[in-house]
Length: 157
Image 1 (cartoon, rainbow, N blue to C red):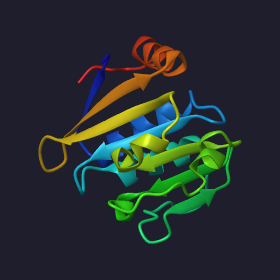
Image 2: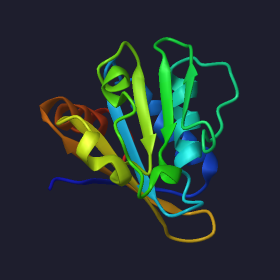
Image 3: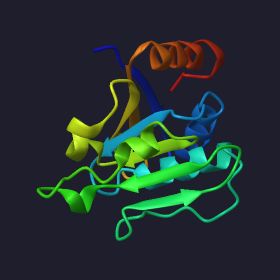
Image 4: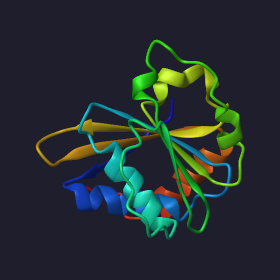
């Protein structure tokens, strides 16, 4: 599996990197976020939201499962952590193939419902504020996106 790595040193850099990724996003794009509790999945989503010109406060949809925000494109923010062990199809395809960008926290819980093509992002805790962000493209669209990111953006650590 091809993987692209980016080290960030604080929450602001995490959000800035996510905002950069948002420049490449289009309707029906799916981003999956995985990492330990407190790794920065919601902060990453906040950066994507900022990059999509969303002016609302973005926080974890832990108790509502899905939150929708309006911006350049709609943002569908899912946190499926509480579904573990009781996953059922909740109309995920309506979001995955809809007119917005879908971000799924704890996406491994709903692996069987994910579309064939998506960008998996894994956030690894390196220290109190440092994180390593791994991008794993699934499909040509996301491979091209990662290649453009590496070519056009600062990937140095």
